[in-house]
Image (cartoon, rainbow, N blue to C red; front, side, top):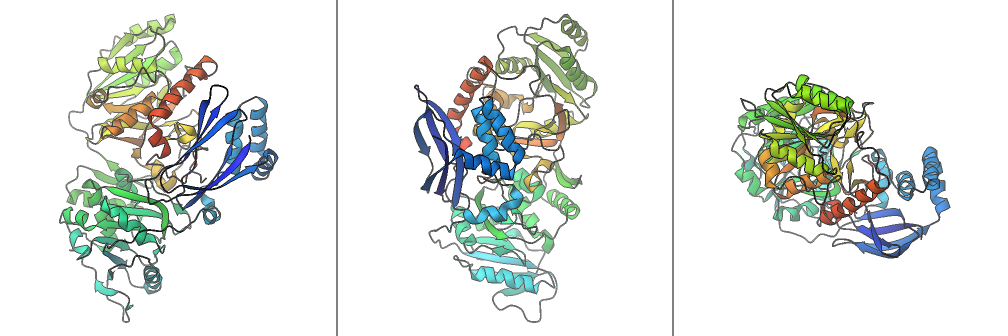
Length: 630
């Protein structure tokens, strides 16, 4: 066995699913899974190393998958390619090979040879693009182009693209914010924009509304690909190339992110049924029309559908960040939403209310010995946290250090502190469950002993999210001691099972679509700092201490909350430092064997999410911890 290349076709209009290549290894047929990239543009390639002790290879894929080519590559050619692209990676790969780390050797070479930075999308895309055949529908679409004076040339380009659509719009209307042009383009109806119009009026007699700006260029199959999805959704949208010629590869429907960033953009369809049930509030000024509809749709619990394929080239939006924040805040007040919007550090933030009096927050810290760690985190919680009602529960796993035991005695002079002694063999999940069982707060916050408080309002930010009825777990932004990112949300499938996105990137990394600057939905967050309403924790049975005593228990917990109807949110408004498992040490020997057992259980239980994390685009790599293409 050795290095192989798979090339395959897929249909992005069907339920997203990454193929899985399973190899059975050794005499006992131990399984090892490789998660392949999705064919979001119609075609995909995967470079992988098949282990030498492989007995059998199996390929699992969803509908529309067609394996077209299996090729072999010499190891020397892969090393040579790595040497040309990233010389130091080649040195690192050879080092990992010499010390016997097959996984690190393989992933280092794959990261250098099979992964493309997002900024190089233009060179990556042509070999992945395939036309998609779509069964025609009779959906009547009204394209409403929002135009300002001086945009006639850009308007002509947009109308050219609409002429080329395989699914023709029923009507095309250009709404001008001032006087109509002297010689209006005859391919469209022209009228003055009426800011008093309500959402339902914009669709007129059609079945769906497509909002565009002059200069937006739809792909020829854009309307044809979006139209069928409205059979089971309220709004449908695709990916886009922005005015900077860089891709906007969007997640599946993510209403918090949509409110904060307006990522839905173009191309998108809004169903007549959705627009008819939105509040009959005027959409306002022309430049705020898209924001008005997307905001109302998000608040109304709209069902969104995403086609993970580039369907448009877009121009800049009318509103700059400050204007968008002000317009969004006004729109939220108009719709009676209990949220404020404001611009901070260049991003639009949503501020959720905190009731008065604030609910009690019970902070649960599992720990053992390590005075330096437990003293620091307790000082941060008790003395450096600006929250009016909290309690601290330490679940001690049999500390023997006299200094730690003396510190406990001192801590318990504070009536907010309780110490639970749990001397059983180390089971992180069971310790957490014991701490939550003893908690009296409406919100529980799981906190590692190797976390340090950096700013006083971190708990306030977590509780505001955790008490939202639709939210389950809430995670924080965690930084390494050097200020780089340790946790910005968990991507299921990353690294083969689950991993932290953009790990080791600079702490101020904005993330794709600017999502690391705002609170947004993710599939899971780490229990190093995790807030959840206590009744929701109990409703799903807490952490699974039998299947996941040490690892994957937090991700499994978040996914079970999701299955019960509660979404997981990550917020940068709560930022702390984390020295990541410094008190446990590295996983080697028996620890590594236990990790692999829990990882196998996790893979079997959550295979569907591993195949498609809804908040991570299927074209993005699971090999590197960045937002790269594969």
